[in-house]
Image: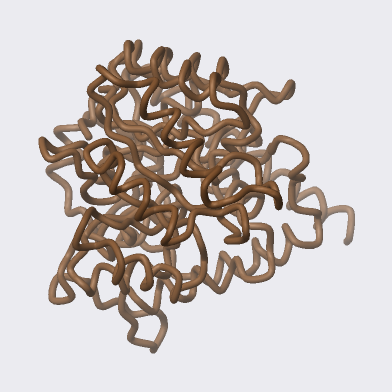
Length: 70
Length: 314
């Protein structure tokens, strides 16, 4: 099955990166996880922003719980 | 993809379906998932199989999705479409219409499990479909039900169908979770046509017998692991280390399988995929299925975190 998507959203060492397919293929395949792949750089960046925002919200909620509990 | 001999090869993912709030298919999210599976090495897609909640979608909905995916540039030969429905005309029409869009391979199951169905009735049912598709160059795959019973295909009905329409059928798909059922089909029919299993735990045994093709629901999540299990020889399978424990692919698969034990499979897989993508569209299921309750979600999340999800696995 042909993979026609040109942009990879990957997670490497706990960080998200939106990189071109050819750059992803140069990496050690065991060094990263493909989160999702997209047709355009814009779509990959939009998804990356969404995931980072979710991460921020999670940390905020955790901190608020700690503050409320203290 | 379908080879010139009309056989499936490699891992075919039994696609889970992301849904909108109104329970229609979220096409954009499904397309991204399809592309992601392709990037991870999946060979083809089963549309509206068991994990794709096939019975819950009408022929029109199935056709619309095929149209959408082909419109996005996915090749029709990359699909195995479950064309089964509760009646003959819908099945024939769906095959004819999607074939005209480029789909070549179709999965056919016995219609609704009716305890009054007979072997002869099933033979007549599939014969009607074959007769009404004459002139079309399609590959048909006969499939068992997920819960074998009186209304399911048995050896007598399959033999009769193969003797009447041997050229029309390109493979048998065993959807039972019973390993001895799979082995019976392989022993009885593998000399005549390929036998594929949809049970991920059976796939590794079947791969060990030299059949490197599997229809996999787990491939939606642990894609790389399933690709290795199904397609590679034992020598190429990975050894992994979790903490101070050395494991291999078979152990990882067994651990993953254990996570889902005692849970309804489709809601559990969709829950895990929604966690992986952090997207609630994957959480929704069509009734009469229902999403996992909060208690089950929490237990599964905890167990999933312990599972060794490294880059070799997904």
